[in-house]
Amino acid sequence: MSFVARHALWSDEKKDAAHRLRRIAEERNLETIRLSFPDQHGILRGKTLVATEALGSLESGCTITTTLLAKDTAHRTVFPVFTAGGGFGMKEMEGAADVLMVPDPTTFRVLPWAPDAGWVLCDIHFADGRPVPFSTRHLYRSVLNTLGNRGYDFIAGLEVEFHIFKLDDPRMAPEDAGQPGQPPSVSLLSHGYQYLTEQRYDLMEPALEIIRRDILALGLPLRSVEVEFGPSQCEFTFAPESGLAPADNMVLFRSAVKQIARRHGYHATFMCRPKLPNLFASGWHLHQSLAARDGGGNAFMAKNGGEILSALGRNYLAGLLAHARASAVFATPTINGYKRYRSYSLAPDRAIWGRDNRGVMIRVLGGPNDPATRLENRIGEPAANPYLYMASQILAGLDGVDRKLDPGPSADTPYEARAEPLPKSLREALGALNDDAFFRQALGAEFVDYYVHIKNAEIDRFQAEVSDWEHREYFEMF
Image (cartoon, rainbow, N blue to C red):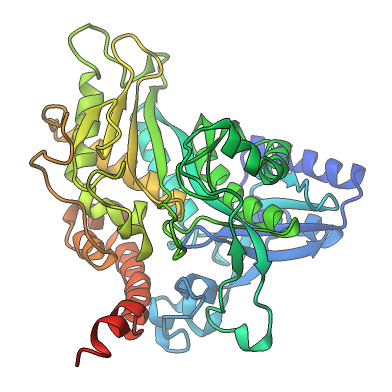
C-alpha cells in the first residue's frame, strides 16, 4: 500500500483531484511539478521534480529535511538540530532527519508564468503518518475541525496591500551575497499621494496588468486591484471563501506576485514598511464571519433592528479584543510590522472596535438582516503567516463565545478611547503570547515555545546590529 493509503490521508475529493492532476499533467505535457509546503513564516518551501517523478510521489510522498522547520527569517537554523531531540525534544527532528511532503491534489495548478510547470501544496508528515506538529497548515486545519464540530464554517475575505517597484539593480555581485544578502535597488512606478485616482492607477497598470492576468489564471478569487495612498503601493482584494482556501490563496498569491514581478523586471514586496523615502506602511485587513452549517446562514448577522451583530457575533468580537495583545504576534510577526501601529494613521493602536470606522482594530460591517455582515480585523501585516493569523482569530473568537464576553460600546473616536494598547514591538507581542494561558492551551505549549524561540532568535539578531539611528544619535555626541 502507498503511504497515503496506509495512513488514510486522502478523502474521496482528494482521490478524484489526483486523477485530474495526472490527466492534466499528461495532456499539458508538463515537464516539472513543484511540491511546496508553507513553513512557519508562511513562506513556500519544497522541491521541483520532473513530472514523472512528481506523479510517482503523489501517494508515496517526497522527503524534505526537518531543518526547514528550524529556520528564522534569515533562513538561519536556530535550533541545535544535531543534539538529542534536535532542540525540539523529538527524536524524529534530530540530526536534520527527513519528513515527507504529501501533496494535497485539490490545490494543483499549472503556473501561468511557467506553463510547463505544475504546482501543488503539500502537508508534512512523519514516517509513521503523524502530522508534523509544527506544520501551521495542519494546525489551522485542526482549528477548522474544532469549529466544524461546533456547527460552523470560517469565512474569510482578504484585502492585501503591498509595493511594486521597478527593479534597477538586483545586487547579484558576489560581495552582495549573505544571510540575508543585500536588498535590490529599485525605483518607483508612481509618486503616490493620489489615493484611488485613475491617473496613478494608469501609471502602475503595465505592471498590475501582468500580475492581474496571471493571478486570475491561477484561479484565485480576485475582486479588485486598487492603488493605495503611498508611492508604488497597491491593494488586491479577494472574494470571501471558506476553510483552508483563504489561507492557501494567500501563500500562493504572495509567492506568485513576487515570481511574476521578478520575471518582468519588477520587485514586489510584502514587507510592511520598506526603508525607502516617503513610503507608506502596508496592511492586511482580514474580513471574517462564521456560517452556520445547519443552513442558518451568516451567524454574525443580527435579525432585529436594535443590534449590529448577533449575540454570537458580539461574543466572538469580544474574544478578538480580549486576546488582541497575545494574538498580535500572529497577525504582525515581524519587527518591522510594529512600526505601522500609529495613532491617526488608518492603522490601529489599541484593542477597540467600531462601526464602519477605519481607525479601530475591528471594523464591524453590515447590520440587521444583512448577509454580508462581518468583522474586519485591521491589525495584520501582509507578511503574516495566514494559517496562524486565521487560526488565532477563530480560537480567540470562540473563547469569547464560550465565556459570553461583551465587547463594550463602539469607539467612535478610536485614537482617544480608553482601551488596552496593542504591543509596541515584536518582543512585547511575544511576551504577551508567552504569558497567555489560553493560547498556550489552545495551540499547545509545544507549539508556542517553538514559535517564541524562532521569533526571539530574529529579535536577538536585530538587537545585535547597530542601526543608522544609533550611529547618528551617539557617534558625534559622545
